Image: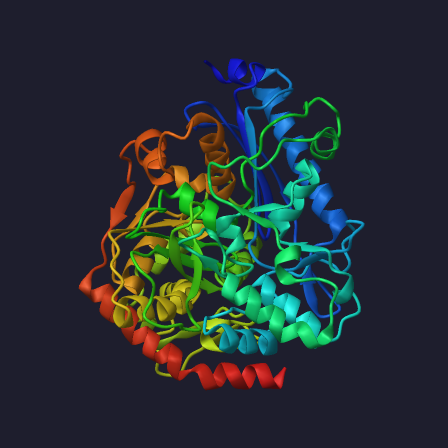
Amino acid sequence: MDPRRTIESGKAVLGIEFGSTRIKAVLIDEDHVPIAQGSHEWENQLVDGLWTYSKEIIWFGLQECYSNLRADVKEKYDVEIEHLASIGISAMMHGYMPFNKEGSLMVPFRTWRNTNTGAAAAELSKLFVYNIPLRWSISHLYQAILNGEEHVPQIAYFTTLAGYIHWKLTGEKVLGVGDASGMLPIDPTTGNYRTDMIEKFDALVAPRKFPWKLGDILPKVLSAGEPAGKLTELGAKRLDITGHLQPGVPLCPPEGDAGTGMVATNAVRPRTGNVSAGTSSFSMIVLEKELSKPNEMIDMVTTPDGNLVAMVHCNNCTSELNAWVRLFKEFQQLLGPVDENQNIYSLLFSHALEGDPDCGGLVAFNYVSGEPVTGFAEGRPLFVRSANDNFSLANFFRVQLYGAIAVLKIGNDVLFNQEHVKVDRITGHGGLFKTPVVGQRFLAAALNSPISVMETAGEGGAWGIALLASYLVNNGGKLSLPDYLDKIVFAGNTGTSIAPTPEDIAGFNRYLEAYKAAFPIEETAVKCK
């Protein structure tokens, strides 16, 4: 069928993802090809010292995103979206959204970006003998308990952003196993929360005599392919305020952005991995077995079908890089009329290839916020050089690109050098890879591994959750998720691969030594301002 008939016949599948700077909707056909999209730009706000998006902004953003999708469909195919085959909702993982028994959100959404949970994460990590990161939902819950926050005794349910949206669209308090693994550790043998950890947590807080038990306020865990409810009449009106979209559409389990990134890059099978590089960055390596011991740099999460994944999550990636590009764009505009066909990102990134392999001695920290992997609760963007360094434009932008992936390398060195994890393929996706070759080549040098990039990976997590929604209704229980992606969606396409050169590897390693040696400078910058 052509796209118009696919939409008219109700066979199109919708995926929506709430990213940190953009909400994106992708409509795909029966062949998993995107046929329309919509988006809405948004930004988090720092309110009372915590990063958040207000409830009003969340729903306005969703409705604007869907409205833009409708407009795209109308312009391209002159048809209205009335029926859909399935829907998937994805969002930034982790964070904290607690609700009372009336279903009211009791405190503003606390996002993954907040690093105020250090005491809670440290105590829980010791209690569970398991690395519990600052941004995980259980850390936020326990920190609220430690802080004596008034809302805690009234909690009837808490969830992630994706779980919240899904609940309000379907009435179902569920979560995909990948997103759930960022709330509380998952037992890979059961595909559910670790019961021993739930018991330890309940015993820990028992003296406080809360009227709830942890297991009673967590979302139900579902794996990819399991039904997760249907779009209610109220949910349809929440999504499409014009009333054209009809209720009854099945939804797949809501997932986190890490899981949808794995799906979008076909990296859900053991010994595959992917790197997402945007506002934040993270690598996901699907494991063959558990790691030998907990490590505070490595988060243990799961694929959307429940396989264990070693995740290195970096709070900062391209924000500081983007700020420098904007500065140079201002300078470009001062010189006179700008050629609209000239992409300044491509111009500056490509020029970085001419820089020295070790950036000529320059060092850059991209810490707009704290960076837990390197032990910084707060951050300060910082550029450092000595008088004798090779200070050129090529080296300056090369060091900004290196700085965007340095923390990622530090975490992955633990996996590859200490745990001896094996990986057959790593796929990159996200804004860092929009300029061909550059980010791919530098990441290959950092991880000492070939990096693949697929054309389809540019569609991002909204496409990934659309694929999971398609898997729900089009697989019929026949194939595992890895086989469905391999055989049906990607059909053997592994993208374009770039292997690292010995010169780039050696240069990045020299840069990393200078980067680590400059930690005291970053520490001083944090203390002084």
